[in-house]
Amino acid sequence: MLSEAYTITMFGGFPHPRHMPCTDCGASIAFTESNEHVCDAERLLDFRLFELRDEIAAFDSELTFWLGSAEGRFAVWLAEQTRR
Image 1 (cartoon, rainbow, N blue to C red):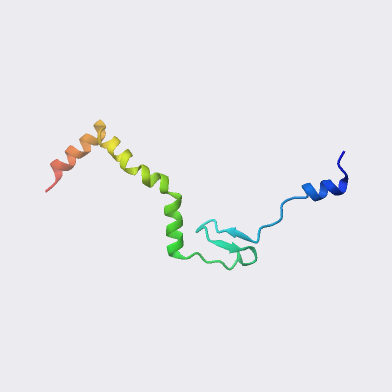
Image 2 (cartoon, rainbow, N blue to C red):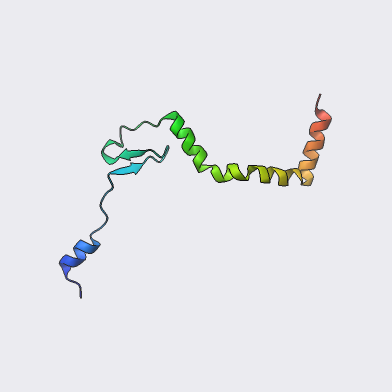
């Protein structure tokens, strides 16, 4: 059986990290400065693009698939008919 002192030391919990990522822009923020943080617009855009990277990468193949469908072929035909 484990001694109580050993159990507290080993399973006492995880220490709080000194820095945490901002949930909006991903910047590393000191835990003590989390209330003063203001997201930089460029960093915010980069982080959003990073979050959407899988969808952006799949766009071309999904568009090609849709253009090959009956609905996509009709949309292309209609666009050609209504073009001036």
